[in-house]
Length: 368
Image (cartoon, rainbow, N blue to C red; front, top):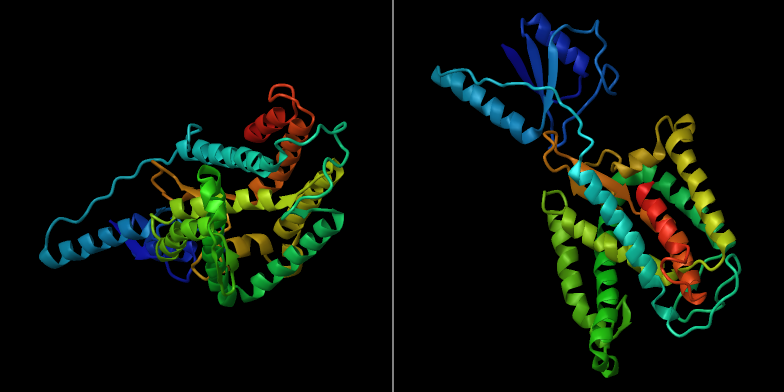
């Protein structure tokens, strides 16, 4: 017989040794959530061969609880002991969820780049690539090198703050994402309504506390935005939360590209290089100073049971372990600045899609 135990505080090796000493041929570890937990003697990922000679299998919470319940009922009624068949887990290169996530990310990069250049219809052609392609934008912020430095410092300070105080701030992050998502949907939806129904531009809106004046179209688009944000808060930890999160994330990514303009190639290069080293430090070097990766701990919710929502996620369809395929907003927004710049340059230099720089850069992003 095999032992079935719930995931607790002792290590996998300790559980395996005790089960082996009790005469079990194997041990089944029931996770405390729908993600199968993998750990080793020190809480990491694999059991030393000398630790135990029995098999160790992890199952998700719902499957494990059903198995435990069936075992208890069989013991009390004197019925047949439940059986469990095991097959090797093989990772397929033809992973539908992976390709779907890549396509979603690449599509959002292209969409946000096109969305950020809607203001360019009717402008004059520009000079060779690399120079500043426009001086001023009404209602938009121009990104320069000092803002990049300020962003890197502010992001670093925020990571450290979240690392130490995540259990207090995670719900603020959830609230901010929900309200921000509703706002982004309202603003983008309002622009779409005004484009489709120009008469809405002449209808007066109203001023709302903490939000300021809102146009009539934004008020109309704010209704579905509020519904989506509220539903996400309620369903965020269920299998139905990921489409809402991805929908709000798409609005955020388009809003970022629309609101912030990078107008010099050297500024784009500085931004990408700075964020490259930013990621290296906070993912791989920060354990030297903080004893664990600051970026990874913050992304995983810091042990709060919640996840930071600043990412796109798609379920692992057909994967017996379940879980999600994920990509952070930064992996879409930052390359998006380069593609937005190239799309802007192509339009201002009157280059077609096949002659310009945007299409090769987009293909490179998709393949990479």
